[in-house]
Picture 1 (cartoon, rainbow, N blue to C red):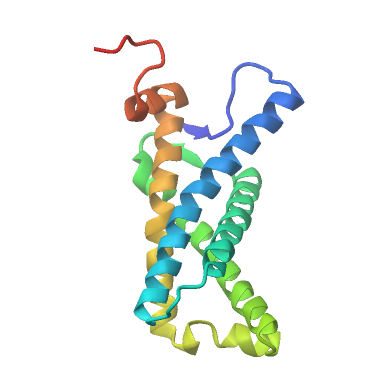
Picture 2: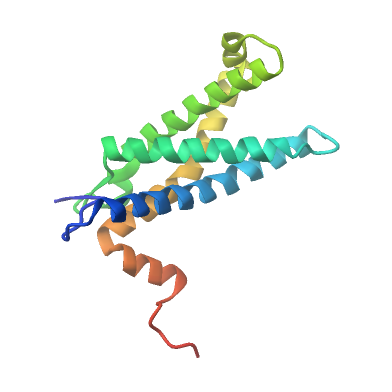
Length: 179
């Protein structure tokens, strides 16, 4: 039996769906933004950039927002499903690879735009992504997979156990009294 992420037994209005999608996009943008800002900060410190330019964090947040939107569009086209007999991990492995391809593609586009901003040719900048080193591209892909995987696991758990149950597991129940 497969379960779709947006399976909802009650009919919701267009406004409710729009608000729900905006919440998903915002939360996913915050999640990805935290990771992308941390990676940008790490890269700046590894390169001994002083002072660390604040623009890298702006680009990281923009990339997070764009990536979140592409992932949500990808989920609308190819919804996350969990096969209960295969479990969450096996069910979501292929989806994780598809979403990594999206993130990696966006990194290539970002490299091209960054090159144009610095007066270089777009295509030359795209091909220079990861210093045109296949091992660096594989390393980037693995790091991005590690970023996307927990998000997909959470989505899979929400499908299997229900959104309210998962949120109460992580953040406590809204109705519980404080001790």
